[in-house]
Length: 335
Figure 1 (cartoon, helix red, strand yellow):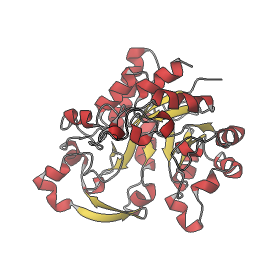
Figure 2 (figure 1 turned 135 degrees about the horizontal axis):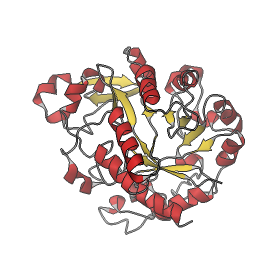
Figure 3 (figure 1 turned 30 degrees about the horizontal axis):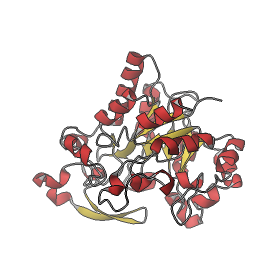
Figure 4 (figure 1 turned 180 degrees about the vertical axis):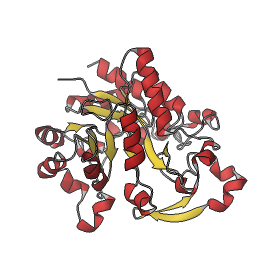
């Protein structure tokens, strides 16, 4: 059996502001096998790395007087967002912004890096992975996610052409290439399947369902069944489930016994890469939390992420998405 892969979630985002070249570089330094850029589009059709197309929470755009009039409220995939959106900016304008920490209450240490880094393009991340692979003599893969594809298609901005152009240019259009293209939606993955040999991954959460299929009533819960996973295998190579679909939690936030998810996915021929492994108590089940809950900073304290990663690897997963790839690397090495 091959060892589980370590996927740096938005880079080493527990230690540097997410989706910055510094976060990706630190992840590589800590042994990550793959770096994960979330992709959104600019007004002029460039792929950039942000968790959302709303960038008020991850850049200094709110302090930039020249962009004040671009603040707006939008309903995207059924959710209301207020702020500044990448589709209203050219790449040149995006490049004038500086990144900041998205979770300052939980990661105050990362705020020391606010204002130091610009927003990278997907091409810059591919360059970094290629350059570091050559320098280190080991392959650094990329794990891009297309964010809100239906929304962007409604604006006549599609991921397909710019994404596939770069995939081909960097020699990643092959079944064994060091890339996984992931999405919470289904239609775009099925369409990509007809255009690329690159591995595809269907993301799924414990609640809700793919926005592009919401009128059909398809839910992630139905997709996570043995029958649903077999259907996914017709167009994808793997699944990225929310952690609790594998190790659910009780009402006291304690882990329960593993579900049949990993076995069902493997029987369907799918690899399993759950998300997201984070060190802060806020994200951990009670089993792995550390410190006194009466402490005002308790939720920002680091618990035993090492043990949590090991529990999932023992459950048979093929990889983990982590904000702390160094801890995940150590947990794998100690097995």
